[in-house]
Length: 150
Length: 150
DNA sequence: GAAGTTAATGAGATGCAGTATCATCAAGCG
DNA sequence: CGCTTGATGATACTGCATCTCATTAACTTC
Image (cartoon, rainbow over all chains, first blue to last red; front, side, top):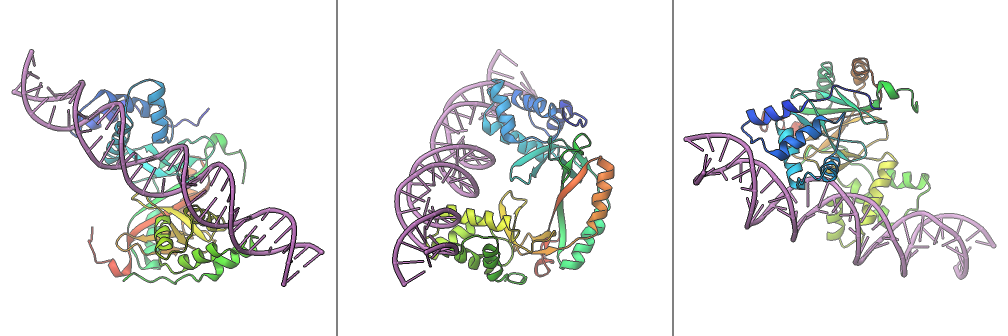
């Protein structure tokens, strides 16, 4: 059983496409449903598998295109797991960070306003002008916090 | 001209291999030199090119194995650029973060002790137990700070 | 310094993620 | 209904990374 985060409904994805002027095609609707049905992060390969198993007849290119599209619209974010895999996380289109459970893969978004101080400190330390940053956190969700204490 | 960070000497890489019980082979020495000669981050592909141009006769598998090895020993860290490319950065085996210049690719390490507070805040917010995190910062180094103000 | 042991190597094959191409299809519009 | 054009999917392709395995050479032992 996975740690439940609020399951994303499919409608926001579909309506966002509509509002941005993209066509609401069957493959896109199907992908929106598949994404909505997932907790936490998922990979393109997982969606490919699911689509194939369900005989939806959706091509690989379409899946990558749709993921790119959702990412452009800020509804998905692509993140890099420590394993080197690329995963996607459904999220709100505001700046935030991801916390990923290393046991079950559940993830959740967090706002970390206080990181601005850290960024400022780093600008001072390095002399760089920081434009953007990515903070990814790995740990164990409440249901797995007891497992394998490091 | 790139922003100069301290160029890493090859010896630490070589001695670390020795101390960890690995053999000091010619390809590994050559790669240590190549890595030491680079500022900032580099990709596996760049090392492959350099090895080929110099006719060192080092196989691609050897390069990837050596990079893995150095990464395991904590002498290199693999990081994911926003473009999706994988790069390696020579670094000290202590926890730190990387700042990467988006103009010239120069990078430098920073310690961000104050991030502990941020992590604690996120643990509280999310209920997760955080084991590790990665913070990657993108911006412009002192030499390119003026370029393309966003 | 020579011989033996075995980690390490390199060439090529293979796997796999992601992209490009392009003829066909269907969403939205009138 | 029919048109226009964005979207699709089959296929081929690219490029990074890994696997396999026979050969090589680094370290050990004597």
